[in-house]
Image (cartoon, rainbow, N blue to C red):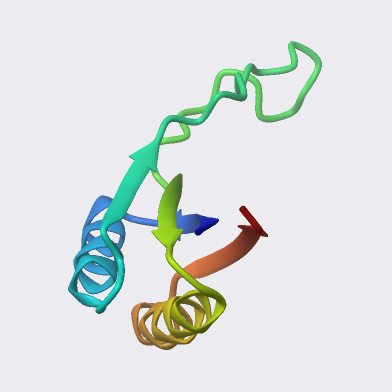
Length: 97
């Protein structure tokens, strides 16, 4: 079993669409959005200190259990295609387990 992590930059609707796609793929039993564990604090000397960050797309991370390499590849291809259509940025991490 492999654990894949996908980092997305997009809206809540984009994340929901990608999650729905992942849950519809054969062999995928677990898809979960995990909290961002990194604190994002303003640097008091930054030119953007105190500015609202709700205007742009958010960053989200999904964890997916893929039973084998073929399914992991299918996940990657499907997510890349949908991300292109949605104009979402995706980054993949893959841990062999």
